[in-house]
Every structure is written in structure tokens, then in C-alpha cells.
Amino acid sequence: MASSLWSSTGGGARPKDVKEADWEKCRNWLKNKTVTPTSAKLPGLDEVTTEYELYQYLKDGTELCRVIGLITSKHVLEGITYRTNNISNLEEKNVKLFISYVDRELKLQNIFGSRNEQVFRKFESFYKVLEGLSKISKLLERKIEVPGFDGVRKGQT
Image (cartoon, rainbow, N blue to C red):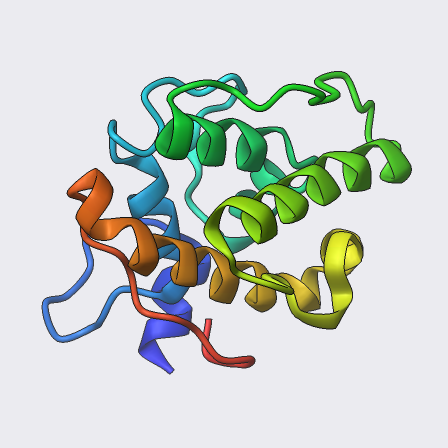
């Protein structure tokens, strides 16, 4: 119970006996300068203090595409739509680009499960994004020399 209280508020110093929330593990992995040298978004990862803010940060797919391109091939994926204006089909186009790249280049099929590019339609499905990014972090940890983070299960964020 204490873990969800601390992770949802995002404030104050965490007692040593309270473990890091899954979304925080993901955010901290993304914040590593090897994973995300610079953010194309404002506010940046340093300002993300709640799980919902991380969801909002990743929702349009632009950072997912930038990160996966930079850590796997040292360049940003072509075809990203940067100005999605919260239009879901433009956001989903970016997420689909990310999914197809991960499938083709990393051989990780259905990285977000059956929800595919629609995974961001509901905040309740965000755990699938965390699971998928955990798989990627573990797969790439030797290549990029950044420790991956453990996966998450529904209801444990």
C-alpha cells in the first residue's frame, strides 16, 4: 500500500523500505542518457513525477520511436508524426511505427500484446506498455550497457 501512495504522489523522499514503483523503474531507465540523450518533449522526463504523467509523455508515440531508433541504430526512426495534436489516429500511427520496428529489428512480436497500437487508448492498459518496455530494456541491456528493469503485472504499478 505504501508503494502506491509514494508512487502516485511522486513527492518527498522515499523511505528506504519502500521499493521503487514499476513506472518509476521505466522512467528512470528512459532518463538514462544512453537511452534518451535528449528529449524532444517538454516537459521532459526530469519533470515526470507520476505514472499518469509518464503515460501522457509516451502516449503520442514520438518518444518511443525516437528512443528505439537511437538505442538500436543511432538515428531517429523515419516517419514519425511530431505534431499529433492529441489526435488518436496520428498518435497510433507513431505507436504502430514503434511496434513494427521492434517486431522487425528486435524480433519481439506483439510487444504490447493484443492491444497493439491502441494500447494508449485507456490509462488502465498502461501496464502493457511498461511490460513491453521492460522486455526491450532487458534485451538491450548488454548492447547499450544500461541495466534493464523488471517487468510489471497488471495491478502492480
